Each structure stands twice: as C-alpha cells, then as structure tokens.
Length: 115
Image (tube, rainbow, N blue to C red; front, side, top):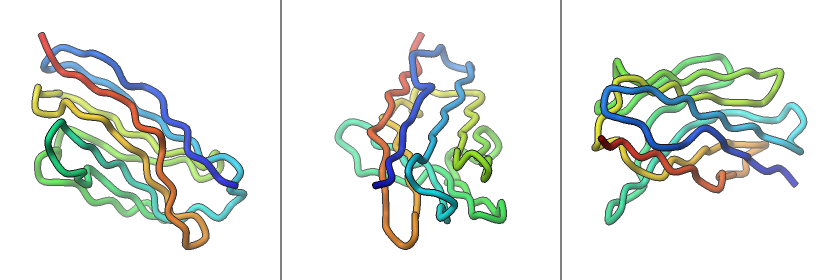
C-alpha cells in the first residue's frame, strides 16, 4: 500500500520562504502526476501546483512567480519551494500523487504566514 509523507511546514513571517517535501513510499516506480493542494479555513481545497513525470508544471495564478514545484523521480519525492510568502498563503498543504491510476493524499502540513 503506497503512502505519502509530507514535511516542511511551519510558521514564517511575510516575505519569508519555506520548502515542503513529500515522499511516496511503497509505490515502486509507478508514481505519475504529483501535485500540491492547499485548504484554508472555511475555504475549498485548491490546486497550488502540479508536475508530470516528465517535469511539465502548472501553477495557480495566485502563486506564479513565487512558488516552484519540482520532483526527484528516483526518490519518488515532490517538493514545493515557497518564496515571498504572504498571509493569504496560510493553509494546510496537501501532497497528491497518482500512483498506477489511484489517487493518494498526504496527511497535510500546516503553513502559517504571520508576523
């Protein structure tokens, strides 16, 4: 059974940076698209960024130019580098992976941007 394990959340001041990581274990080499979503209190979960096996990326307009998604296929790991963070980026961030056609979610990691 595959699972996703996230790390890297925390508290940061506006303008600061954080790097999230998400490792897929128990999946072998069958990890396809990977992505990061986020959910703020009282709001729906939204796509932040996604990346294909080949490295093609897409970003939400709200994070373009500030966030960078990347992956290491050998480690089945996806990263989210978040720069120039704003208070409105505060949310629980969830890792997502398509593994052999099944959808998997991480447990979520809290990111709080506040002075």
